[in-house]
Image (cartoon, rainbow, N blue to C red; front, side):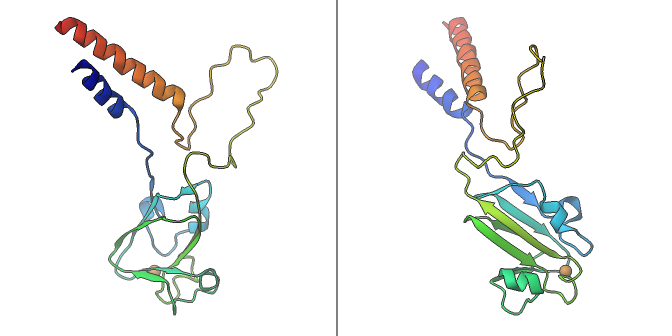
Length: 175
Ligand SMILES: [Cu+2]
């Protein structure tokens, strides 16, 4: 009984690998005047993440090839969405290209190109700062957890240990 409860707590305490949903353009959404080149910067898109496009009736989302992205050609889109609230799962690594097919919108900047990278824990560290610190920081605190959301084994262990202690205390009180 206690073992089963502990096991259940372990399961609850172990975070599943989680996907991130990116709202394209953030609060502005998918619209004319958006700057999706800037929006992409600093973001890492992993396989399993999703893009959420929110847009009004004058817009659509077309997934296109790179050349059609470059040329704003919506004539042979790979996929087309128009329901105003489109979630696209990034299912494979590689580049993906989206444009709004409404006349003039893509040329005006309504175009999005992303690079999807394979997730599975070890992403190449393209943005991690060097760990070496300037001289004389013997008492500096440990570095903060990575912003990229990589699960930390140390944190998980601490969490599990904490749950175990709580469970033990509860069982001790109950017995
Ligand atoms: Cu548009």
